[in-house]
Image 1: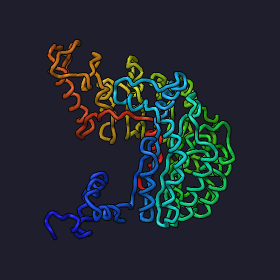
Image 2: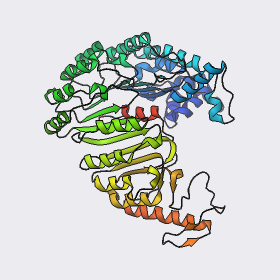
Image 3: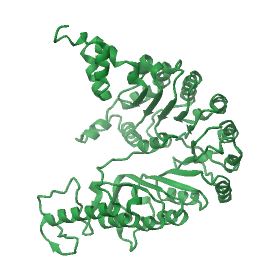
Image 4: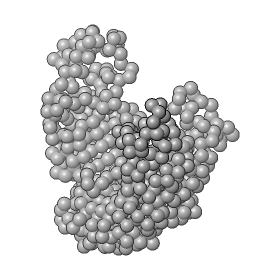
Length: 507
């Protein structure tokens, strides 16, 4: 072999080398030559496939990969996310002016205002059903996660939404994938109401009733009334004997379902019920608190998690109404579209109703805002951490928090708070001095006096740095492990909702 002729390397050597590379680096290395390109599609690299589609990339790359490697895939996670507010605002401006709005100069804005985005979006969902063709003959598929976020229903942008024809084609394509598989154990489908058709649920329960362990089927669509699928689901559950985790829209969770769960065949295996609440003007499926109370008594080990979208003050009141005291709530995840619409009453109610059960609380927003203004005598988040004795996971993103309250939470919960995440750029001292943010420069004196942890005041910027370091040390000491705030994450609704679909029975 010539020293410079890498194409003559044995395939086993190339495959071994590729196994130590990331997927991105492996793809780049495969462009070296045809021999390496063949090694790129070795079955061992395609047992688990994670694909994310956007209207910029389209469906072609994913379709090519699955056409070539679909028979090797054992776990597939395919998410198709669209920046809903960006598209809606963009197309509304285009419709009003007849042309695309001019770029504002930032990279993000210039990417948001591409004139062909609407056409790309429409082509994306038209081509989406064909992506799964490579899996129509795959017998070994064990896990399938598919999530598609369409444009919001109530926008005035004039964008064409996926209609009944899309739902039919998407459902038929997914049914072929499921019919081919013989080993399916985890199924997460969230694209539109077509995925919950009665015949689909019945076929699913008939074929995989004895082996399916995880079923996530939220529609992420507005449900204006309780549909037949909610009733069908209740009867279909009787065929699932190994189901461990179930995720549904709130509109699918009825009193009939709660009353039927203890007598279903999955009663002995079901350990987690996840509910998605507040996506648009969802159906007012107010559940009787007595139904939850009876369910809790008959299934004492069942854990309930709630993922809620709060869009305004009214949505907060609705959530307060939904969260009745008898729900065996262990995890609550909240995304607040308008950060100021989060009310102290909600946090107080959660602390009061679920002080003995709540183990996880996440509060996210995509716009920076003070957490309740931090002007109350007793911070509601601190009080919640004091009352909820089982709380072991607390994640806050987008909200600005007083560092002294962060220390108070760490002191109250101690090492039992195994996950504690707040964002570095959104912590500030009680002199309203944002530190560790992008705007803060340790080398430049600030307009506010800094102070030490003992209360003495100094004009030196180093004092603020020392104060920060001291507090982080104190937090680490309280948690009995090294602790640092995390970097900004910029949570979005698609990211927030997708996390529910990734919950696995082995976790």
